[in-house]
Image (cartoon, rainbow over all chains, first blue to last red; front, side):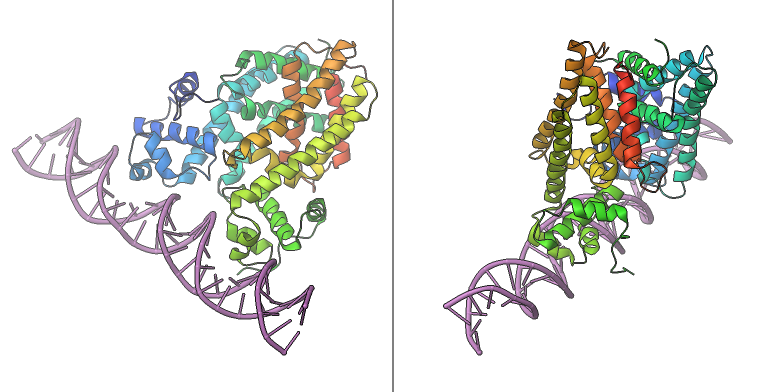
Length: 213
Length: 213
DNA sequence: CGCGAAGGTGAGCAAGCGCTTAGAAGCGCA
DNA sequence: TGCGCTTCTAAGCGCTTGCTCACCTTCGCG
């Protein structure tokens, strides 16, 4: 049940704002954060430019000083969000260790990111279709690189005998689908913290690939 | 500009149309099938009533003879779709056998349904937020009943020692999330058939709960 | 055959949409 | 102080949206 109507200044909002600290100038950042929240809450198509500007405390016209179109906002969000998610994956992959350790690290941090940044992640992962045809391929390429990270680790694990995975392609799909979908259902008012979900999912995925716990 | 022909009459369309055979009169069914396809393709908010009517080969006004609003269409689709998904789950659960067998059957048939009816499932599972406040609770209740089926089997399996599941609630969430998300990525032109995905996922889930294969 | 109900249409309304424009307000700098 | 640049606003344009309305068919039935 929701307590405060608009957008409470709770942890979620702070986390969202902090994550976009690099965007400047400040007005552009405020608009972008407002857009992330609105898109995540209602979806891209159900969000109006007036709503975004209103959340940022500005007039509707102000939006067009910093962004050419509403779709450019979505593209910027998508681009930065995917970059961040991919960076999280790659950092975990580079941590080293056995295939099982790397897989667990990757899943744990990827899931934690999707839980902590579930507002951003929801936009990034579920509003892809709203991107224009000139921006979509770029984002799809980033997604393919995320797939490749997971697939690589699964292949490593199979090769060195750590994993028992009959269908590497299908399992890659399943693992990523599982992780990404966290953004849809995660609720920061719920019982589980991002860390807990990350640990749980790392364990579940290790079991899926037949690694020894 | 507009070709009177709706979308391609491929397998997907036939499966979708057949699934709604019970809806009558025929014009109402055609509109509903058109709405399912449009909502799945573009999302509820990006779909116009003119688009729906056009796909059904009718004028925009005809829609309002059979449905009061665009939202009523979504509600009807959501209601029937959730009923169907729940029926699939319950039938598999009632099949009997060990906890592991019941879980495998449930996952296999639930996933197969989400793959075969991925057009309907996409609407049912991902356009929930577009429902009005008077319809949403009814649909959420159906979803809770789906959760309960999976949770029940996990609890049974833990009780009789077949499963090793430290966090039943979290694992229930993960299993359902995994199955439901099939609707998002499944592509009937892709490499895997609904049966194959169902088998793969049943296996993955058995591993997740630590059941002996 | 005449008739009323049911199912369909073309035209169009009010509201809301993304986006633009004219001009005001604040700022650093001569 | 006055100038030019950036930032922001009030007003509103052209268009699309969900939906309605007056009217036209079609058809079962006395």
